[in-house]
Image (cartoon, rainbow, N blue to C red):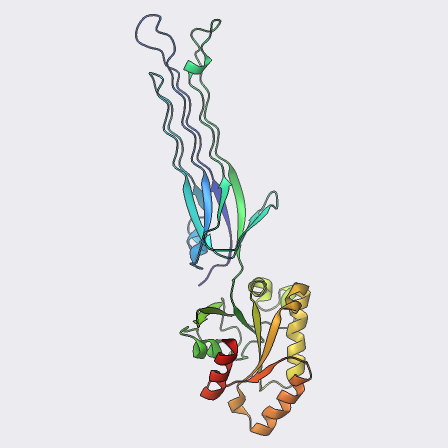
Length: 313
C-alpha cells in the first residue's frame, strides 16, 4: 500500500557539552575542550514513491549528536549530517508555523533541521579575573520540527472517473502495471502507477459525488490530480447518462481546486464492447457536444488501445 500522507518529527543533532577540566600540574589552569556541533538533517527527493511507507513504523528521525569536549583542550567531534530521502512530489508542511516546501524534482535538497551548537569548555572562560572557571556550556539542542508530509503524484497522465469506469483495467492494458481489478466500487484504495513510453500513468481511485466533502474515499486522492499533466476522464459506456457522469466529476474537481478545471483533458468512453455500435455512437455524439476530444476504447479491442497509445505518444 502506498502511504501518501503522514506526520513525522525530524530533529537535528544535539551539540556536545563543553568540558570542565584542569591540568594535573599545579597552577596549570583550565583545559576543558568544546563540544562538537550536532549534525544537520537534510531531505532530498528521490524517484521511489514508497519512501513515506517506512515512517509508519518509525515517525521520528534525528541526526547525529556532537561529542562532548574533553580534557587537554580537546574538542568533541561534530555529529555527522544525515540525509532523509523523500518521494519526488512531496509537500512538506510545518504543523506549527504552516511553512511549506515542495520537493518538485528529483535530487532537490532542503536543509530541514539545524544541528545544535556545541558548548564551550571551561578553557574558553578563563581570564585575568576568572583563572579557574568551574563551569562549561551545555550543547544546544538540535532543531525539532513536527511535519506533515503529503505526496502529490507527478504524473504525465491521470486516469479519473467514477468507480468501475474501467480505469484499472485500462492501466493494466496500456502498461505493465498489475492493479487489482474487480467489479465493485473502491477496488483501488491507493493510486496505481504504470509506465507507457517512459511516461507515467496514474490510476486515481474512483471519485463519487461529494468526494470533495469527504464522501467515499473523499479528498484523500484528489490531491494526486493536482500535478497530473493530462487528465484521461474515463466514462463507462454503461452509464445511464454519460454527460451527467462527466459533469459530476468535473464539479468535484472544481470544488476541490478550481485550477484542476484548467488542465488539458481527453474523454475516454470505456467498455464499448458491452454495447452495440448504435448505442456507442449515441453516447459519443452526446459527449462530443462538450467540445473535447472523445475516444472510444475497450480492453477487448486492440485497435482502440493502439489508437489511444498513438494519441498519447
